[in-house]
Length: 181
Image (cartoon, rainbow, N blue to C red; front, top):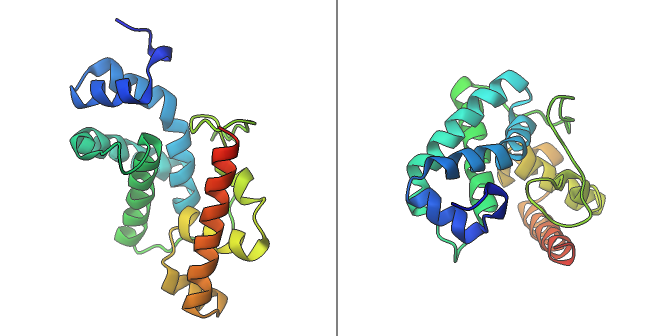
């Protein structure tokens, strides 16, 4: 059997889809802190974030057969599940994500890296490099869970402008990630 540190993404996906326990343990060990940070950015409470994180891993376990390597990377797919679960929790409890850009608590790891590794890269540092208008809408949409319509209302800005800023910000982030791989 291979050592866990040697899994490629393709090997990991294959083992996950074969329901291998060591693959799920590896997945949790290597991705839980990054997914927890995504959830915390939406819910703003470390205890709730941990509860939602457990639900996220259950969803990943149940839906791993639906993951398509041609559509996205594994981390991107899991990050979307985490973000959606956090937003679902906020809506279910009647809470709204904060408009204020919240910082992660001290116990949520946010490690920086000079090369892209979704396990260790703090995406917020890249977002901070975006121009302020793009930074603001990316944070509101992807870290705090607001819809584009909600962002229009919050910022009192036309929908077309919000869509353009989100798209431009995401293109710039993708470029940063590709350069730093």
